[in-house]
Each structure stands twice: as structure tokens, then as C-alpha cells.
Length: 222
Image (cartoon, rainbow, N blue to C red; front, side):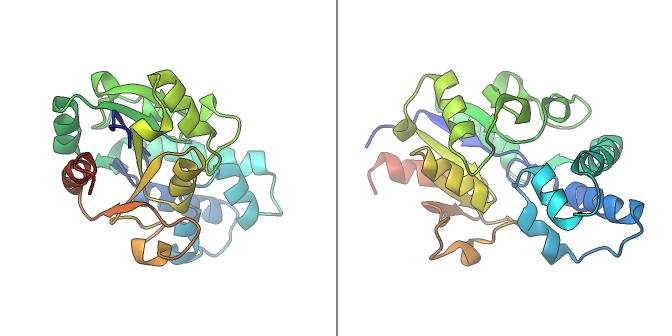
């Protein structure tokens, strides 16, 4: 098995705690249309999916373009105060860099909200490659987002590992031939629920620092 040279990270729910931000944006769409808000448990399974398709499912009587605009315009207003790195993530990124690993972000989020200096995500120089929503034509679980990252990094799928919080992340990795890791802090896809499914990850980590232990185990061939 090839040596891992790069770590690919999903953004929402993996690197950054955007869970409440996303929920509040959904609630705003319900409020705008005078509809009752659905419980959180109905919304979190959409995390990681393509936004327009998810909104269309819940608001079939309203134009998709309109619902996306309502959602995104509200989110842009509150983004600054609702986003933070998950605990231990800053230290993990620094440790990965110190080991000589290359880092990438693979997300469906638009570049405008990724390249935003008003919150604690300093993408440069930590992340060598960022694949955002504008870069892809077929979103996760298609392998395309992962494949674009691999191509830009100039490495093969067996030389990377992908960290995510949703079924779409693990399937994207698998479809691209990349080993997948599901985070234990996921709201979208709790690891217990993924077990035995077609999106079961190769590995699960419960906290950010567990990735370092996992990489050591892989290095030893365990």
C-alpha cells in the first residue's frame, strides 16, 4: 500500500463547526415562506448534499433558484459569528504540516464563503489545494471533487486519505479510490448509523488528534 502523502478535508462539519449556521439558514427559509420548521433530525441528513437539490426536496412548490438565494443571502449575513474550527483541529493541521503531509479542502461550499478572513480559517499557507463548489460539475458522492484535488496535488488515490462527516464524503472518497475517515462528531452521519451501509467509512476518529494515531497505524501497515 502506498504511503499517504496528502489529507483531504471536507469543510462543513469536519474542519469547521458550521452546524448551527446551516440549521439557522434552513430555518430562515421555512420562516420566509411562513412554513413550520422541521425538526433538526429531518434536516441534518441533508448535510453534505448539493444545496439546490436538498432545498427542492423540502420546498417543491417554490423555485429552486429562489430558495437557494434566500438561504445563501441569510447565511452570508450571519457567517462571521457562527463559524469556528472544531476543537483540536488547529493543532492537528499544524501537526500534519510538520509531518510533511500536504493538505486540501474538498467541499461543495462556494469560494466566497471559504475565502473569508472574518473567521478563524486561514486557508493559506496550510491548504495547498482548495476544491470548492465552483470547481465541480458533479457534486459528492461523485468522485469528481476528490479527483480534482488529486489531480491538482499530482498524486494517486492510494496516496491520499479523506476526512468527512457525511455519507456523501465517504462515498466520494470510495468512488475515487481514496481511503475514507468519518468523524465521530458528525451530525449528518453518526458512525454507528453508517456501520454496515454502502457508505461505511474505512476508519472512524472520535477527536481530531485521533487522525495522527490512525496515520501512524497505516504507516505501520496495521
